[in-house]
Figure 1 (cartoon, rainbow, N blue to C red):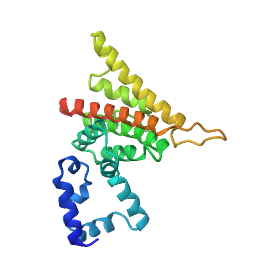
Figure 2: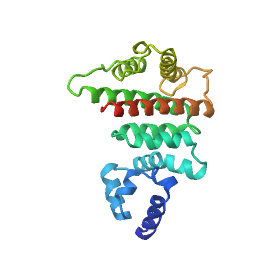
Figure 3: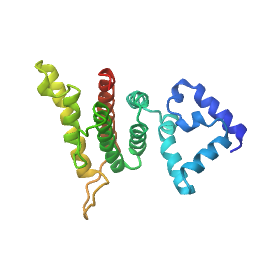
Length: 223
């Protein structure tokens, strides 16, 4: 791609309010194709790695352009972009990009998203003393995070809040369980159970909503 074409496309994407928030960060930083080439060479040494990286980074934008992203996924994407953790946004982008073609991978990424958010929040609470261990699973990480953010059902007396926060616990535990059962992180026998794209969308969007809730709550608490 010539530098002139790159500049035109970059300007059009950044000028469109409905697309600008989904433009990968390196497009914002690299003002011409020469800048981009220097960036990608420093990040990845092979063309295969570069193609994989670009496919993942552009997935949310392409989903919006080609199929139209749902309002909920757009809201979550924009919300997580405000969170100072590039890894969290990368995992979320990977999860939503996999739903149609790789639903099992999407479910695995959804669980990784919640684990990452919990870890980042806990690290923000106490950077010097680890609040979790390397073997802690998602349910335990969430329980620790919820307690620190005053989101545990036992920390409230109003029945409606206990019920709502209890539902959050159920969602998180369900994401962990379905990943163990249907995700792509474990081997399968001769009669594997396949997950449909609609199920992956449900798991990913629930995980995204929970991740955003934790991020916004942590921000409100000054974490």
